[in-house]
Length: 157
Length: 285
Image 1 (cartoon, each protein chain N blue to C red):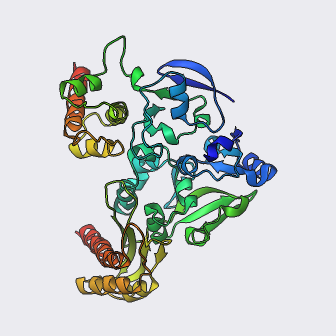
Image 2: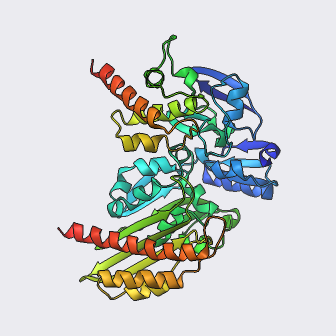
Image 3: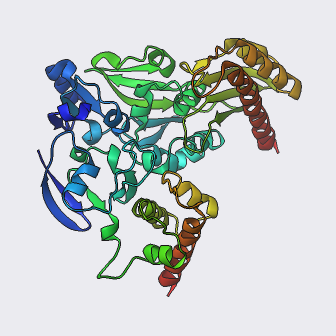
Protein backbone atom coordinates (compact mmCIF):
# COMPACT_ATOMS: atom_id res chain seq x y z
CA UNK A 1 0.00 0.00 0.00
CA UNK A 2 1.04 3.63 -0.54
CA UNK A 3 0.89 6.31 2.12
CA UNK A 4 1.57 10.02 1.90
CA UNK A 5 3.81 11.21 4.67
CA UNK A 6 5.24 14.63 5.37
CA UNK A 7 8.70 14.08 6.83
CA UNK A 8 10.56 17.14 8.06
CA UNK A 9 8.38 19.37 5.91
CA UNK A 10 8.79 17.32 2.72
CA UNK A 11 5.69 15.53 1.41
CA UNK A 12 6.39 12.13 -0.03
CA UNK A 13 4.54 9.06 -1.25
CA UNK A 14 5.95 5.93 0.31
CA UNK A 15 5.26 2.32 -0.61
CA UNK A 16 4.88 0.30 2.60
CA UNK A 17 3.98 -3.21 3.69
CA UNK A 18 0.68 -3.22 5.64
CA UNK A 19 2.33 -4.51 8.82
CA UNK A 20 5.42 -2.25 8.75
CA UNK A 21 6.10 0.10 11.64
CA UNK A 22 6.87 3.78 11.22
CA UNK A 23 10.37 3.06 12.56
CA UNK A 24 11.07 0.51 9.81
CA UNK A 25 9.72 2.80 7.09
CA UNK A 26 11.63 5.89 8.25
CA UNK A 27 14.94 4.04 8.42
CA UNK A 28 14.32 2.41 5.04
CA UNK A 29 13.75 5.78 3.37
CA UNK A 30 16.88 7.27 4.88
CA UNK A 31 16.11 8.78 8.28
CA UNK A 32 18.82 6.95 10.19
CA UNK A 33 18.67 9.21 13.27
CA UNK A 34 15.62 7.15 14.25
CA UNK A 35 17.15 4.27 16.23
CA UNK A 36 15.86 0.83 16.94
CA UNK A 37 16.54 -0.06 20.56
CA UNK A 38 14.10 -2.37 22.30
CA UNK A 39 11.33 -2.51 19.70
CA UNK A 40 8.77 -2.63 22.48
CA UNK A 41 8.24 0.96 23.60
CA UNK A 42 10.57 0.85 26.60
CA UNK A 43 13.68 2.76 25.52
CA UNK A 44 12.52 5.72 23.43
CA UNK A 45 15.47 5.60 20.99
CA UNK A 46 12.97 5.53 18.11
CA UNK A 47 11.00 8.62 19.18
CA UNK A 48 9.76 10.97 16.46
CA UNK A 49 7.25 13.79 16.49
CA UNK A 50 3.95 12.67 14.96
CA UNK A 51 1.72 15.72 14.41
CA UNK A 52 3.87 17.51 17.00
CA UNK A 53 3.82 14.81 19.67
CA UNK A 54 6.66 12.51 20.60
CA UNK A 55 5.80 8.84 20.02
CA UNK A 56 7.61 5.50 19.95
CA UNK A 57 7.84 4.91 16.18
CA UNK A 58 8.54 1.21 16.85
CA UNK A 59 4.98 0.76 18.11
CA UNK A 60 3.28 2.92 15.52
CA UNK A 61 2.05 1.19 12.38
CA UNK A 62 3.11 3.18 9.32
CA UNK A 63 -0.32 2.61 7.79
CA UNK A 64 -1.82 4.73 10.58
CA UNK A 65 0.38 7.71 9.66
CA UNK A 66 -1.07 8.28 6.18
CA UNK A 67 -1.52 12.01 5.67
CA UNK A 68 0.25 12.93 8.88
CA UNK A 69 3.35 14.92 9.70
CA UNK A 70 6.56 13.40 11.06
CA UNK A 71 9.59 15.25 12.38
CA UNK A 72 12.90 13.48 13.07
CA UNK A 73 15.93 15.27 14.45
CA UNK A 74 17.15 15.70 10.86
CA UNK A 75 14.26 18.17 10.72
CA UNK A 76 15.05 20.04 13.95
CA UNK A 77 18.04 21.84 12.45
CA UNK A 78 17.24 24.62 10.02
CA UNK A 79 19.48 25.84 7.16
CA UNK A 80 22.49 24.10 8.61
CA UNK A 81 22.01 25.65 12.08
CA UNK A 82 21.49 23.28 14.95
CA UNK A 83 18.26 23.60 16.93
CA UNK A 84 18.58 25.33 20.32
CA UNK A 85 18.06 21.95 22.01
CA UNK A 86 20.87 20.36 19.99
CA UNK A 87 23.17 23.29 20.82
CA UNK A 88 22.33 22.97 24.52
CA UNK A 89 22.99 19.21 24.51
CA UNK A 90 26.45 19.98 23.10
CA UNK A 91 27.26 22.93 25.36
CA UNK A 92 26.07 21.13 28.51
CA UNK A 93 27.83 17.86 27.67
CA UNK A 94 24.59 15.88 27.53
CA UNK A 95 25.85 13.47 24.84
CA UNK A 96 27.96 10.42 25.53
CA UNK A 97 27.57 7.43 23.20
CA UNK A 98 24.75 9.27 21.44
CA UNK A 99 22.39 6.38 20.83
CA UNK A 100 19.58 7.79 22.99
CA UNK A 101 20.20 11.40 21.95
CA UNK A 102 17.82 11.66 18.96
CA UNK A 103 14.89 10.24 20.95
CA UNK A 104 15.74 12.38 23.95
CA UNK A 105 15.82 15.53 21.78
CA UNK A 106 12.46 14.65 20.25
CA UNK A 107 10.87 14.12 23.69
CA UNK A 108 12.35 17.45 24.81
CA UNK A 109 11.09 19.21 21.66
CA UNK A 110 7.55 17.99 22.41
CA UNK A 111 7.88 19.22 26.00
CA UNK A 112 9.16 22.70 25.14
CA UNK A 113 6.57 23.24 22.42
CA UNK A 114 3.84 22.76 25.04
CA UNK A 115 5.55 23.97 28.24
CA UNK A 116 8.10 26.72 27.50
CA UNK A 117 9.20 27.03 31.13
CA UNK A 118 9.19 23.49 32.52
CA UNK A 119 10.07 22.60 36.11
CA UNK A 120 12.75 19.99 36.74
CA UNK A 121 9.96 17.53 37.58
CA UNK A 122 8.28 18.23 34.25
CA UNK A 123 11.55 17.70 32.40
CA UNK A 124 12.14 14.41 34.23
CA UNK A 125 8.60 13.30 33.42
CA UNK A 126 8.99 14.27 29.75
CA UNK A 127 12.10 12.13 29.24
CA UNK A 128 10.95 9.29 31.47
CA UNK A 129 10.34 7.15 28.39
CA UNK A 130 13.89 7.64 27.09
CA UNK A 131 16.53 5.36 28.54
CA UNK A 132 20.18 6.46 28.65
CA UNK A 133 22.64 3.83 29.80
CA UNK A 134 25.74 6.10 29.79
CA UNK A 135 24.68 8.97 32.04
CA UNK A 136 22.61 9.63 35.11
CA UNK A 137 20.33 12.01 33.15
CA UNK A 138 21.70 15.03 35.04
CA UNK A 139 23.30 16.63 31.98
CA UNK A 140 20.28 16.06 29.74
CA UNK A 141 17.96 17.63 32.32
CA UNK A 142 20.29 20.60 32.59
CA UNK A 143 20.57 20.89 28.80
CA UNK A 144 16.78 20.93 28.39
CA UNK A 145 16.51 23.60 31.09
CA UNK A 146 19.19 25.69 29.37
CA UNK A 147 17.51 25.25 25.98
CA UNK A 148 14.18 26.35 27.44
CA UNK A 149 15.83 29.43 28.88
CA UNK A 150 17.52 30.29 25.55
CA UNK A 151 14.30 29.73 23.60
CA UNK A 152 12.35 32.00 25.92
CA UNK A 153 15.12 34.58 25.58
CA UNK A 154 14.77 34.44 21.79
CA UNK A 155 10.99 34.78 21.98
CA UNK A 156 11.20 37.76 24.32
CA UNK A 157 13.73 39.47 22.08
CA UNK B 1 6.24 -11.74 14.01
CA UNK B 2 2.47 -11.53 13.58
CA UNK B 3 2.75 -8.24 11.75
CA UNK B 4 4.28 -9.88 8.67
CA UNK B 5 0.97 -11.60 8.03
CA UNK B 6 -0.97 -8.33 7.93
CA UNK B 7 -2.03 -7.83 4.33
CA UNK B 8 -4.42 -4.96 4.60
CA UNK B 9 -5.20 -1.94 6.78
CA UNK B 10 -8.58 -0.37 6.16
CA UNK B 11 -9.82 2.89 7.63
CA UNK B 12 -13.62 3.10 7.89
CA UNK B 13 -15.15 6.53 8.46
CA UNK B 14 -18.34 5.40 10.21
CA UNK B 15 -19.11 2.88 12.92
CA UNK B 16 -21.54 1.05 10.64
CA UNK B 17 -18.84 0.68 7.99
CA UNK B 18 -16.45 -0.63 10.66
CA UNK B 19 -18.99 -3.19 11.85
CA UNK B 20 -19.73 -4.43 8.33
CA UNK B 21 -15.99 -4.76 7.65
CA UNK B 22 -15.61 -6.71 10.86
CA UNK B 23 -18.44 -9.06 9.85
CA UNK B 24 -17.27 -9.36 6.24
CA UNK B 25 -13.69 -10.28 7.10
CA UNK B 26 -14.52 -12.54 10.04
CA UNK B 27 -11.93 -13.72 12.56
CA UNK B 28 -9.00 -12.68 10.34
CA UNK B 29 -9.87 -9.02 11.01
CA UNK B 30 -8.81 -7.12 14.13
CA UNK B 31 -9.46 -3.63 15.41
CA UNK B 32 -6.57 -1.15 15.45
CA UNK B 33 -6.67 1.61 18.04
CA UNK B 34 -3.37 3.20 19.08
CA UNK B 35 -1.67 -0.07 18.17
CA UNK B 36 0.78 -0.25 21.08
CA UNK B 37 -0.57 -3.59 22.25
CA UNK B 38 -1.21 -4.96 18.80
CA UNK B 39 2.25 -4.21 17.38
CA UNK B 40 3.84 -6.13 20.24
CA UNK B 41 1.42 -9.03 20.48
CA UNK B 42 -0.37 -9.31 17.13
CA UNK B 43 -2.31 -12.58 17.08
CA UNK B 44 -1.05 -14.83 14.26
CA UNK B 45 -4.49 -15.24 12.67
CA UNK B 46 -4.92 -11.54 11.86
CA UNK B 47 -4.50 -10.52 8.22
CA UNK B 48 -6.66 -7.38 8.14
CA UNK B 49 -6.61 -4.45 10.53
CA UNK B 50 -9.52 -2.07 10.84
CA UNK B 51 -8.04 1.28 11.84
CA UNK B 52 -10.44 3.14 14.14
CA UNK B 53 -8.69 6.50 13.87
CA UNK B 54 -11.08 8.04 11.31
CA UNK B 55 -14.17 7.29 13.40
CA UNK B 56 -15.82 10.11 15.35
CA UNK B 57 -14.79 8.58 18.70
CA UNK B 58 -11.96 10.89 19.69
CA UNK B 59 -13.34 13.35 22.25
CA UNK B 60 -13.66 14.28 25.91
CA UNK B 61 -16.94 15.99 26.80
CA UNK B 62 -19.25 16.68 29.69
CA UNK B 63 -22.81 15.47 29.67
CA UNK B 64 -25.04 16.13 32.69
CA UNK B 65 -22.07 15.95 35.05
CA UNK B 66 -20.72 12.73 33.46
CA UNK B 67 -17.47 12.78 31.54
CA UNK B 68 -17.70 10.95 28.22
CA UNK B 69 -14.46 9.89 26.62
CA UNK B 70 -14.33 8.52 23.06
CA UNK B 71 -12.51 5.19 22.82
CA UNK B 72 -9.96 6.50 20.29
CA UNK B 73 -8.84 9.36 22.56
CA UNK B 74 -5.18 9.10 23.50
CA UNK B 75 -4.13 8.97 27.14
CA UNK B 76 -2.25 12.23 26.50
CA UNK B 77 -5.39 14.04 25.35
CA UNK B 78 -7.24 12.82 28.44
CA UNK B 79 -4.38 13.86 30.69
CA UNK B 80 -4.34 17.37 29.19
CA UNK B 81 -8.10 17.88 29.19
CA UNK B 82 -9.43 20.47 31.69
CA UNK B 83 -12.54 18.37 32.42
CA UNK B 84 -10.38 15.65 33.95
CA UNK B 85 -8.35 18.11 36.02
CA UNK B 86 -11.59 19.05 37.75
CA UNK B 87 -12.98 15.53 38.12
CA UNK B 88 -12.76 14.29 41.76
CA UNK B 89 -9.73 16.45 42.57
CA UNK B 90 -7.89 15.28 39.43
CA UNK B 91 -7.65 11.63 40.52
CA UNK B 92 -7.58 10.42 36.90
CA UNK B 93 -4.83 12.86 35.95
CA UNK B 94 -2.73 11.74 38.93
CA UNK B 95 -3.20 8.10 37.92
CA UNK B 96 -2.48 8.64 34.21
CA UNK B 97 0.82 10.38 34.99
CA UNK B 98 1.92 7.02 36.42
CA UNK B 99 0.88 5.04 33.35
CA UNK B 100 3.73 4.06 30.99
CA UNK B 101 5.73 6.98 29.52
CA UNK B 102 4.75 10.21 27.74
CA UNK B 103 5.83 8.65 24.43
CA UNK B 104 3.46 5.73 24.91
CA UNK B 105 0.66 7.92 26.25
CA UNK B 106 0.80 9.88 22.98
CA UNK B 107 -0.09 6.69 21.08
CA UNK B 108 -2.14 4.55 23.44
CA UNK B 109 -5.91 5.06 23.43
CA UNK B 110 -8.31 4.66 26.33
CA UNK B 111 -10.36 2.11 24.38
CA UNK B 112 -7.25 0.03 23.76
CA UNK B 113 -6.33 0.19 27.43
CA UNK B 114 -9.78 -1.06 28.43
CA UNK B 115 -10.15 -3.88 25.89
CA UNK B 116 -6.61 -5.12 26.51
CA UNK B 117 -7.94 -5.94 30.00
CA UNK B 118 -4.44 -6.25 31.45
CA UNK B 119 -4.57 -7.41 35.09
CA UNK B 120 -2.01 -4.77 36.08
CA UNK B 121 -3.84 -1.91 34.33
CA UNK B 122 -3.86 1.22 36.51
CA UNK B 123 -6.65 2.67 34.40
CA UNK B 124 -8.96 -0.30 34.90
CA UNK B 125 -8.39 -0.45 38.67
CA UNK B 126 -9.35 3.21 39.10
CA UNK B 127 -12.19 3.16 36.55
CA UNK B 128 -13.73 0.15 38.32
CA UNK B 129 -13.61 2.02 41.63
CA UNK B 130 -15.27 5.02 39.97
CA UNK B 131 -18.08 2.88 38.53
CA UNK B 132 -17.24 3.65 34.89
CA UNK B 133 -19.53 2.40 32.13
CA UNK B 134 -18.66 1.64 28.54
CA UNK B 135 -20.63 1.98 25.33
CA UNK B 136 -20.32 -0.79 22.77
CA UNK B 137 -21.63 -0.76 19.22
CA UNK B 138 -22.54 -3.71 17.05
CA UNK B 139 -25.10 -2.02 14.82
CA UNK B 140 -26.86 -0.79 17.90
CA UNK B 141 -25.36 0.97 20.88
CA UNK B 142 -25.46 -0.54 24.36
CA UNK B 143 -24.18 0.77 27.67
CA UNK B 144 -22.62 -1.67 30.14
CA UNK B 145 -20.72 -1.34 33.40
CA UNK B 146 -16.96 -1.74 32.82
CA UNK B 147 -17.10 -4.32 35.61
CA UNK B 148 -19.29 -6.47 33.36
CA UNK B 149 -17.06 -6.67 30.27
CA UNK B 150 -13.69 -6.68 32.03
CA UNK B 151 -13.64 -10.07 33.81
CA UNK B 152 -14.57 -11.95 30.64
CA UNK B 153 -11.56 -10.42 28.88
CA UNK B 154 -13.50 -10.97 25.68
CA UNK B 155 -12.84 -9.00 22.53
CA UNK B 156 -16.49 -7.99 22.77
CA UNK B 157 -17.52 -10.60 20.20
CA UNK B 158 -17.75 -8.47 17.07
CA UNK B 159 -18.73 -5.24 18.78
CA UNK B 160 -16.66 -2.07 19.05
CA UNK B 161 -16.06 -0.29 22.33
CA UNK B 162 -16.85 3.32 21.42
CA UNK B 163 -16.87 5.26 24.66
CA UNK B 164 -16.17 5.16 28.37
CA UNK B 165 -18.41 7.17 30.67
CA UNK B 166 -17.32 8.36 34.09
CA UNK B 167 -20.37 9.01 36.25
CA UNK B 168 -21.11 12.44 37.67
CA UNK B 169 -19.15 12.71 40.93
CA UNK B 170 -21.36 11.97 43.94
CA UNK B 171 -21.73 14.88 46.37
CA UNK B 172 -19.32 14.48 49.27
CA UNK B 173 -17.31 11.83 47.45
CA UNK B 174 -13.58 11.56 46.91
CA UNK B 175 -11.38 8.97 45.25
CA UNK B 176 -7.73 8.01 45.38
CA UNK B 177 -5.34 5.74 43.50
CA UNK B 178 -2.08 4.18 44.61
CA UNK B 179 0.45 2.19 42.58
CA UNK B 180 3.48 0.17 43.59
CA UNK B 181 6.06 -0.53 40.92
CA UNK B 182 9.75 -1.37 40.79
CA UNK B 183 10.77 1.48 38.49
CA UNK B 184 9.10 4.70 37.36
CA UNK B 185 7.47 3.24 34.31
CA UNK B 186 7.23 -0.45 35.03
CA UNK B 187 3.80 -2.04 35.31
CA UNK B 188 2.30 -2.29 38.78
CA UNK B 189 3.40 -4.95 41.25
CA UNK B 190 0.08 -4.04 42.79
CA UNK B 191 -2.33 -1.14 42.46
CA UNK B 192 -5.29 0.02 44.42
CA UNK B 193 -8.14 2.52 44.07
CA UNK B 194 -10.85 3.59 46.50
CA UNK B 195 -13.88 5.82 46.32
CA UNK B 196 -15.84 6.94 49.36
CA UNK B 197 -18.94 9.10 49.66
CA UNK B 198 -19.66 10.68 53.01
CA UNK B 199 -23.11 11.79 54.16
CA UNK B 200 -23.45 13.33 57.61
CA UNK B 201 -19.83 12.27 58.15
CA UNK B 202 -20.61 8.60 57.56
CA UNK B 203 -19.58 6.48 54.57
CA UNK B 204 -22.59 5.73 52.41
CA UNK B 205 -20.82 4.49 49.31
CA UNK B 206 -17.45 2.81 49.37
CA UNK B 207 -15.58 0.99 46.66
CA UNK B 208 -12.18 -0.62 47.11
CA UNK B 209 -10.47 -2.20 44.10
CA UNK B 210 -7.15 -4.03 43.96
CA UNK B 211 -5.32 -4.81 40.69
CA UNK B 212 -2.14 -6.56 39.63
CA UNK B 213 -2.62 -9.19 42.30
CA UNK B 214 -1.37 -10.47 39.68
CA UNK B 215 -4.81 -11.60 38.61
CA UNK B 216 -7.57 -9.36 37.26
CA UNK B 217 -8.48 -6.29 39.28
CA UNK B 218 -11.38 -6.89 41.60
CA UNK B 219 -13.32 -5.11 44.30
CA UNK B 220 -13.13 -6.25 47.92
CA UNK B 221 -16.73 -6.26 49.19
CA UNK B 222 -15.65 -7.22 52.73
CA UNK B 223 -13.91 -3.86 53.08
CA UNK B 224 -16.74 -1.96 51.48
CA UNK B 225 -19.08 -3.47 54.10
CA UNK B 226 -16.76 -2.42 56.94
CA UNK B 227 -16.68 1.17 55.69
CA UNK B 228 -20.37 1.59 55.00
CA UNK B 229 -22.21 3.38 57.77
CA UNK B 230 -19.09 4.38 59.69
CA UNK B 231 -17.25 7.69 59.97
CA UNK B 232 -13.94 7.77 58.10
CA UNK B 233 -11.67 7.95 61.15
CA UNK B 234 -8.09 6.78 61.52
CA UNK B 235 -9.38 3.73 63.34
CA UNK B 236 -11.87 2.83 60.60
CA UNK B 237 -9.14 3.22 57.99
CA UNK B 238 -6.80 0.93 59.89
CA UNK B 239 -9.49 -1.72 60.25
CA UNK B 240 -10.47 -1.44 56.59
CA UNK B 241 -6.85 -1.73 55.42
CA UNK B 242 -6.27 -4.78 57.63
CA UNK B 243 -9.48 -6.38 56.35
CA UNK B 244 -8.36 -5.71 52.77
CA UNK B 245 -5.04 -7.40 53.48
CA UNK B 246 -6.82 -10.46 54.87
CA UNK B 247 -9.45 -10.67 52.14
CA UNK B 248 -7.46 -9.85 48.99
CA UNK B 249 -6.78 -12.81 46.71
CA UNK B 250 -3.10 -12.27 46.02
CA UNK B 251 -0.60 -14.65 44.44
CA UNK B 252 3.08 -14.67 43.64
CA UNK B 253 4.67 -14.19 40.25
CA UNK B 254 8.13 -13.06 39.10
CA UNK B 255 7.44 -9.49 40.28
CA UNK B 256 6.60 -10.23 43.91
CA UNK B 257 5.70 -12.90 46.45
CA UNK B 258 2.13 -13.31 47.67
CA UNK B 259 3.22 -12.25 51.15
CA UNK B 260 4.75 -9.01 49.86
CA UNK B 261 1.63 -8.26 47.82
CA UNK B 262 -0.52 -8.86 50.90
CA UNK B 263 1.49 -6.23 52.74
CA UNK B 264 1.11 -3.84 49.80
CA UNK B 265 -2.67 -4.22 49.97
CA UNK B 266 -2.57 -3.06 53.59
CA UNK B 267 -0.38 -0.08 52.75
CA UNK B 268 -2.20 0.79 49.51
CA UNK B 269 -5.72 0.73 50.91
CA UNK B 270 -4.53 2.68 53.96
CA UNK B 271 -2.90 5.35 51.78
CA UNK B 272 -5.92 5.69 49.49
CA UNK B 273 -8.38 6.04 52.37
CA UNK B 274 -6.17 8.56 54.21
CA UNK B 275 -5.85 10.56 50.98
CA UNK B 276 -9.63 10.54 50.61
CA UNK B 277 -10.06 11.67 54.22
CA UNK B 278 -7.58 14.51 53.68
CA UNK B 279 -9.28 15.55 50.43
CA UNK B 280 -12.70 15.64 52.06
CA UNK B 281 -11.45 17.54 55.10
CA UNK B 282 -9.58 19.93 52.78
CA UNK B 283 -12.77 20.63 50.85
CA UNK B 284 -14.65 21.54 54.02
CA UNK B 285 -12.13 24.20 54.94
